[in-house]
Image 1 (cartoon, rainbow, N blue to C red):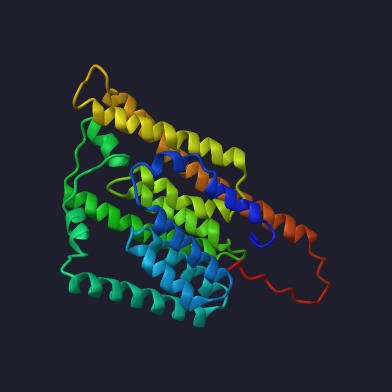
Image 2: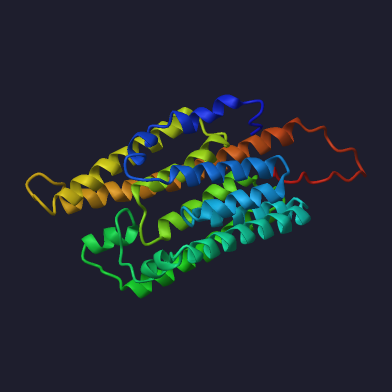
Length: 291
């Protein structure tokens, strides 16, 4: 969607109900801002700026990496291969620079990733639901599944852009990001904020947004009530109820991604129907994906 012609779409970020809850427990919003700016720079054909901004966003959370991968896949399919190289190079340069600066200042920026490798199932994940029902997977197995989730996300993204009528960037990035979220060791309540720029740039309407946001807010409340049950079981949320809410949240994520893909396909069908019929004996070019 052309943001210049539809500036009101920014309200999907500024007025989203999930900001009310996520902002209380997270500093992710700055990283989300960097990711949104990076996507905008890519659309405006500023590949170096796009890569630098997305690389900087990675320092907040790893989600922008999968969005960067979506940019590379869609850009390569659209023929913007030189732009893809510049974007990836700029992102890699910023990431390395941030790591070097962190080490120079006495920090250990890789510590969170080492801790993650040893982490057990955490709140919001499908693996936490299994743990509640009595199935506990070792941390090493969960690490392998999470890594496999990234591989699956890349494969699915590749399939979506390899079609005769490839999907545009935003639906592809959303599907890939949701796959990573669902297969990860944790799906914290603040993860919802990373979807807001993608929703704003998509064809999603407020009804779909608010339905998803309602599930997210319910999950936020349920998570803290479940945490509180460890201190006072009489006032907290039972584990079974928390598991049901967590499952509903994961299903809502899948539904959001499906809806975004469905809307993109319908828009493409309408565009094809509006195209003039090809003359006999003439070849018609397949349009490139939105970049």
